[in-house]
Amino acid sequence: MCADDTGMFLRATQRTKDGKTHRYWSVVESRRVRGGGVVQKTLLYLGEINDSQHAGWCRSIEAVDGKRGVQMALFPEDRTPPPDVPAVHLRMSQLTLERPRQWGACWLAMEVWDQLRLDEFWAARLPDSREGTSWRNVLKTLTAYRLIDPGSEWRLHRLWYDRSAMADLLGEDFRLAQKDTLYRCLDKLVEHKAALFRHLKERWSDLFDAKFEVLLYDLTSTYFESDPPESTGGLRRYGYSRDKRSDCVQVVIALIVTPEGFPLTYEVLSGNTLDSTTLAAFLQKIETLYGKADRIWVMDRGIPTEESLAQMRASDPPVQYLVGTPKGRLSRLEQAFLGRPWCSVRDGVEVKLVPEDGEIYVLARSADRVLKERAMRRRKLKRLWKRLRQLQTMSQTREELLMRLGAAHRDAGHAWRLVSVRTDPFSFTLNRPKLRQVRRREGRYLLRTNLPDNDPATLWPMYIQLTEVEQAFKEIKHDLGLRPIFHQTDGRIEGHIFISFLAYCLQVTIKHRLRPCAPGLTPRSALEQMKGIQMLDVRIPTTDGRQLTLSRTTQPDPAQQLLLAQLQLVLPPQPPPRITSPAPGETVDVVKT
Image (cartoon, rainbow, N blue to C red; front, side, top):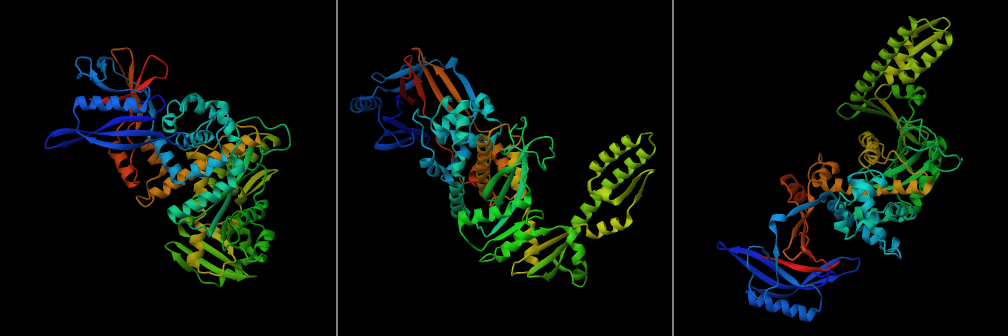
């Protein structure tokens, strides 16, 4: 191969016929294309040629092409090549295998990247720097790292990049993984978030016929392993932690996904943001991004307020919703529900409907959920009762008793409401009226909606789809390693979360590629399988002091072959061999004999 990877050369293909191996030759030209890639074009088909004809074509190519590269034939050091054929003798006894690196999962990530046409999206938005840094390739590396083996940018620089085949797949060197380059790339991304999600919405519609009429909205938090900020501004704040890390500052992430798990947008909010203050801004954001349309918003209780629901009903056209409602409202509606019959929507699930003030209230009862909540309540109550009895036998001051009761209150959670405690003198009794009320409401959900279609068989399954946004948060936090965050500036924090969501977009695309094949086959298991395909360098010294390098990927095992067949993917051909001369950068093409 020539030093600049372009020019003409001879390519041989083998075919076995009637027990005999035939070698057919073609003249092929390598051409560099925009973006740094190389494509190959077959110029002439020569068929079977003998050694003298081969030597003549080699001389002709060298004369016409005018390149420094020379095509060579390889022979073991104990074999004599034909006359007039440029040849290299190899010291096969000194063959070494070097630089094993993970290739398969990296290649799969880049295949999905191409299916989403993200190069096309980022081409104008993320141009190369004047120094030649390809920011698109830096972004590809950050996203693949987050998808395959998430960790810090420092770990990517120090360890992961050299142990992966990203450099081979992107045609880059280690300059791409300099730590300052990785961090600087984070600063260039967030401004394109809205345009990216519009682009992805179109691609998912084309690839999977995805629908976007039902929107699932929820919030989560993620914490930081860093010192609290000194200033009062910024995103990092103490607040209600869904990760049970109230000792750490955090940010709140609001996310909208479809029932199939496709994200439409997200927002990073300060860590002390209240759920109930976020809805109005997101209604406007979705309308600005995607225009007005008949959409149904599905949310859990705690997000919508009476004021926001009234605004949704009063808008033109009205915004339709199906939302969870605190169980405390059951006290006001209990009499209205008593006269209504239960309607079965599926095995173990029954609902009742009550219209009121232009809305429909839905009371759902799940037999499985009754058993689960009852078992949880009994376990907590037994543990609390045991602890209170222990405190009753202890010798302690009033202050010590109050401290221990506070700890017991924290551990008991909602079970504390079922016990009446007096401190002077210390005694406790079971609150039986409260217990009877809790038992009646276990396994029951109260929903409200302004949907014109009030079919119970439709409303309950629609609300249960909220588990999809919970699954999205789970995958982003656990599979993609969103937490903890170590960055300290708001721009880098948002860039880190942007990379995590871009990796999630690749993961959800893989999920929908796998779903028709087998619902139980997850993107994580597919990536783990593909990680087994490794790339390594086969190095063989020559008798004249040069070195032959063959970068080769391992052959897929049966499980990997099945996965590739189901995904309708074909592995690319092996990279061409290279001979490195003592002179820096001088290489020649190789023909194996």
